[in-house]
Image (tube, rainbow over all chains, first blue to last red; front, side, top):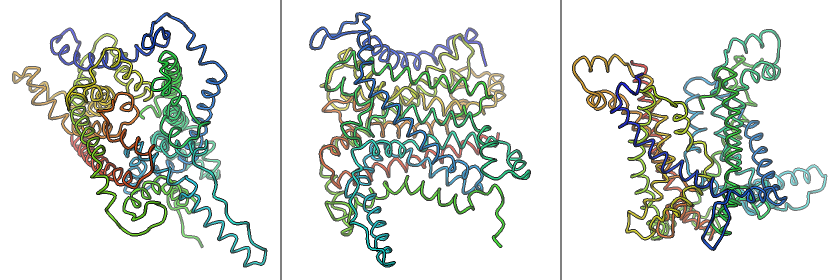
Length: 303
Length: 277
């Protein structure tokens, strides 16, 4: 590594284009939103930055507070389900033979690379009243009913398709569907680093698999688990498409409220305040992740 | 007696196979159903009525959709080229030089990756409105705002991929070149860029996929005449569910999967050549 003063011409020609781009087309726009969040509408299209905190105050009104808490609750539920569903997957990949490992990792990552909109759209056909999930459940129900009739226990009432689409359930389903790879990859990275002899020692000394998982694997993988929780929770908290396409009127989350302020309600200062509340939440989460990674010797920081 | 299973060979255990099966069914069944029913000869697409390509023809005859697809490709192409240049420069800068506030700058370069998409979307929307970016330029200049927004979130990804590659560079190569009289630019052109090449290719494919796939940020920056493919599909989905959307989605998925496989190939080449050093 070279000190920049020893070769300032080359340094400047490498530094100026990316730094200028980042500044002008990323930091300035974000800073603009930050300023807007302290402004107020003074005309139809006029906004004056007055330093007011009214927009943040309005965000704490019960209506919006409830939406923010609901966003947190839905993102939290999504993250928990991803953790429970993803942990065994990560465990299986870590201990899989090399060839299978490559394929399983590819299988986890591939949906990650397909379009978010298309993946969310695909779930509409799964969840709607005459969709695949209801068809599958109806088939199981009829089977069970037939079995009961065969045993002479009478039969069940005909299957009533469940109302799944446009509910909170559909939003969580969609968010888990989209974010599962976010969880599996950091978990995989953390589990991969664990010294296998520790797990084998625990098994040799008579602990079962569940006890080994609880007392050996989980504590060792904790930084990776925290990292996975955060990288899943942050995008889930700001998700726009899943609540928009799969949720009902009551399952709108913070991102949908932000979108409405900018595209329909035309209340930019309030939308800006909500955006920055989301940004602050993101920064806190990332800060926690960095602190955990540092105190635990960098485990799981790679993803 | 049950056959012996190694204690840690979780993949060979029944409950684990069942779990993996359910998870992968969950991940893939909706997408496979979407593809399958793009070929289904029925408007109510839950029952299979026979194979047809008519929805592909319908998608192809939908001029708005084709135009949006063209826009997406043009944006992705320009965004990729600029992102590779900027990302490569950022990676070189952070790898090569010691300078004040370096860790701050490196954190800032990573910021577009972690900022929630919706926040970046509204930032771009307000920015381009505020500076009065003209909305009625001729094609392809009217795509400028969307393209610039895409570059802002694509180039940091390229910087990460290229930065990881530079770690494996052998500084003796550069010293040898300098001893033989090479200037900074000679070293960059003849030694560093060839070393970075697999990462530049992988980064380019990554940037292209990211740009092609983006919905939220584009949704805020595109106007009525600068609709991209995901934004067009979104408006079609809101309007009515038609198998033509399935057909169009299948085409886009095929393109992204192809690009991803190519990117992984490039990265694998990157790993094996890194091991050779």
